[in-house]
Image (cartoon, rainbow, N blue to C red; front, side, top):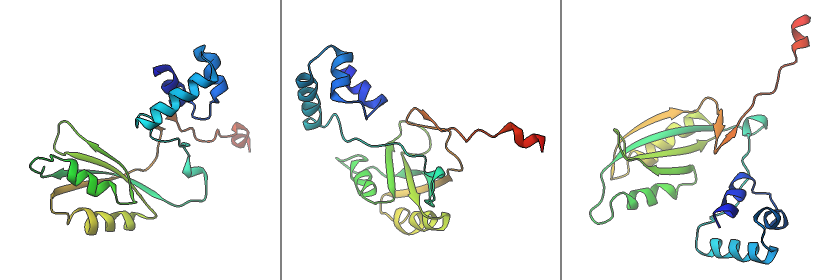
Length: 159
């Protein structure tokens, strides 16, 4: 099971046939294991990792740290649930130490849109004590994948 998960995490496009060969299992065994893992919520989905900077799509990413007041009997879960339902929010993480409790990654079309989201949607939430916003200027590595800039043609220096 762990091997199948690692193969999928490394290459979500790997076929069931390829995984069966690598794991020395039948395709039916691989399919059954994957179905069980999906049903149990271990496999949550299949996504491609896109370098949006190489497209025409305009967007801004930001990391937002939140200090929040935990709720009786629910801890941080209720506020995290409220926050992760916003479409701008890509990720929500509970942090174990430091000055902030939750770390969010959000996306918007412009810095102004992100600032508006923080000021008018996040900050006014009853349980949010404070926020700290950090705009992402460039991604170097995400989810284990290194983002490489196009290699510059050295011949340009000769002109």
